[in-house]
Image 1 (cartoon, rainbow, N blue to C red):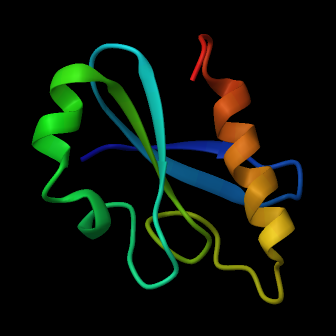
Image 2 (spheres, helix red, strand yellow; image 1 turned 30 degrees about the vertical axis):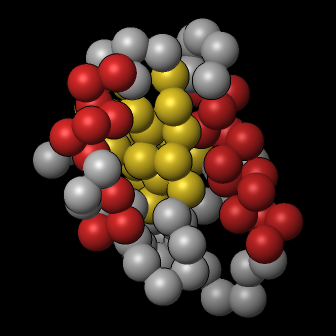
Length: 89
């Protein structure tokens, strides 16, 4: 699957996968998974109804692995992806 990239205001490169069609839905996985395995079983259902943006958190996918980043910075990453989408999320 193709990974898309945007810069975070904090300087990291954030990657995400985009698939499906319909209203925009942003997915953020938990700490012990990644952008693919976390959504593996629900992806077929979600992509039928939504344009999904599955964000890879720092150190996963092709997102930069930064040292000592905070949850606040990861929130900034998510906000950057949301702001890059040209429609309501």
